Length: 313
Image 1 (cartoon, rainbow, N blue to C red):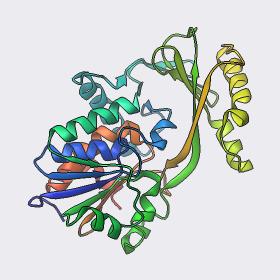
Image 2 (cartoon, rainbow, N blue to C red):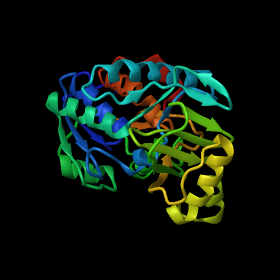
Image 3 (tube, rainbow, N blue to C red):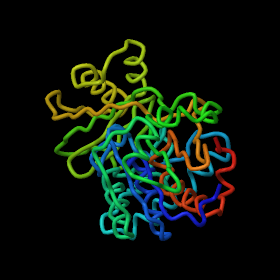
């Protein structure tokens, strides 16, 4: 089902995977339309992501290797853009330092991909939500291939394809949240910290980003929504207990929450679903976006990346 001779592709979803994929396909001389339900440049999912680029505890080995390879791509690609998006500051996991880790500025990453897409002649159509592939075809006209990279909405878009039931019973994982906290001074070394389920990292000048996996699980059990009222006091106490850093109670805090894209087995799902429909879904979307984008562009030109073999639909 290679599209070696196909000349028009629609990519649905302008998050980290969709925007990067559209850009890499367009750079191969294909006419690409990037269709986004949200305004191009940011998505609810990317805003709520801790955006830690790492390969820790990821199994099986093929999945861990994807993450390691993509971390190197982030470093290389980010360095040649006017506004680097990958900050290789290292991480500290329960006291153990990992020098190659870092975090991604998701908005800077998406902006770079959209810029490259437009430079290659691609088109962006944003703020247009769609509910089916037929609607995509009606909006964008004839296309040789549709690449669905719609995050948590992926399963719904391809629900009419019988093959989708094999590994894609769902594309929606638990809701996660990210707190962005304005600070006058960060008393900790500039690293990504992960201790006892609490994760904290810098988020540019005068700000840190934080999440608590424990609080996320509690919100899920109670059916509660993440907000300053429901999480801030507890999160502040957890940060103080685990990192020894006292944050003022009146600090300016923004809470973003969104369902995390995730297949039922937790692993990426990347490949052809039907004659003209390709899917790209991953829980580790921010880490894997550069590698998946390059591999998908290869796939569509008939040059299959063997690293994706274990993750086909």
